[in-house]
Structure formats: structure tokens, C-alpha cells
Length: 116
Image (tube, rainbow, N blue to C red; front, side, top):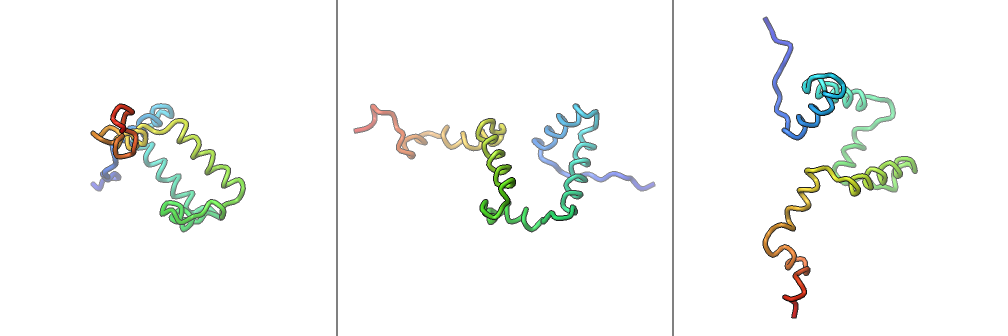
């Protein structure tokens, strides 16, 4: 008998996010991930949606000026939210370079007592 399921590898961070969202909605983490995948597919196929534009944005080739005023506002609001409450992984990524020995010195931020 053929199985209706297949295994895929997902990052542990993504699975943790799916587990948290699933608990609220009384789903399994797998069902939550499948829901998100189906939602993404539906959005990709929605009228007026351009996956090409998404790719441009992800590659850093989409200029803010090409968006509608509402689109610009949404981007800036989302960016502001990331600065106000960065995700744990993002916070750690940017904090890591500052924890290495001599990091402050390399950036010209050595303690005043070391300056001549």
C-alpha cells in the first residue's frame, strides 16, 4: 500500500515556529507547515501577484521607489518592526561579530584607556 506522506528536511528553527503556531490552532507541526506551503502556493497563483517581483526583492534588485505608497509603507513598517523586536536568530547573527576578541578595536571602538 502506497503512503500518502513523504519526508522532507526542514530547519529546526522553522519546525519550532510551526510547532508554536500549530499549538495555537490545534494542528500538528506537519499540518501547520503544509498549511503554510499551500498558502504560499495560493499567493503565488493569485491574480496580480508576480513571483518575479518577489525574486527581485529577495535578490535585492527591487527598488522601494517602484512600489505603491501603500507598499512602501508596508515595507518600512515591517523593517521598523524588525529593528524594534528582532527575531532571536537575527539578533544572534548581528551580535556574534561583536563578541570576538578585538572586535571593538577593529571598528575603532577600543576603550578610551587604550587610545593614545
